[in-house]
Length: 321
Ligand SMILES: [Fe+2]
Ligand SMILES: [Fe+2]
Image 1 (cartoon, rainbow, N blue to C red):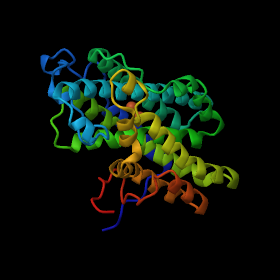
Image 2: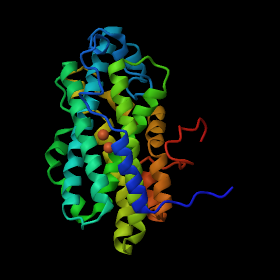
Image 3: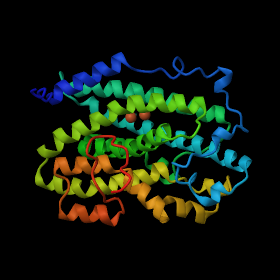
Image 4: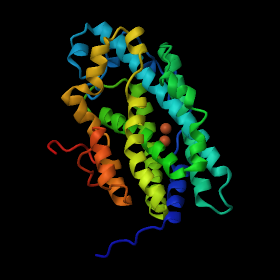
């Protein structure tokens, strides 16, 4: 048996674009928001956080009375959706910045505008969930909300770094959503549907970011390669914290003690393992693209995100590394 020849970069982008046409979702067609089974009941125990969530796994949270677990759980899940849609909003702006100056005939133009379309639907879907949850959540921390107008410019100045940021945001969200969908916890059907749609479309987005970096990073000059090799793990770690670690409102509005938040993100041993596990795929990509060198390896280690590389993309975490 002979292996199929590897697709060229342009062919891969064409395949991804065709995938967007064949299999895409609309926030208000593909989710039965008004089906009574999809309604958000604020006493529904399915809003408790699953144990694959770092806070949900914390003994303080697990010892709470059920109604408090539900209250905090719904707030937290609404805030994760809000953070997700703010991140997607920045991403859409960066894509528009990037495609504006692409030459005619570029396959990236078609693929990336499909991606922006899908992200727009995701922002609608997540905002509708936030609105229906009744939780007035802030999403990202103030600093990053304030910095959001500047980030899309990176797409013009240093696009390989911009798509590293994209991947840095998409990987942890995708990893968490897949872990929740794979877990045995009973999910609310609304959240389950939202996550299924998101995971299905993000698979293409993550593929694109990997393909783009595999194509472009080896073409960079030595200075930009060295710079990106160090920026890459820093971006991964910073984006992960911005997306996954809740802001101070979890303490001020929801009464979760600061110490518990600190433990869950990322002081405890379990939490540190969870953090390292987010990055198996991106570590593999760094190895493949030549972004792992003695200096950057130290940076990965210092940031607490060094570890084994995935053998294939989206490999579930191996029990014993
Ligand atoms: Fe998305
Ligand atoms: Fe995405």
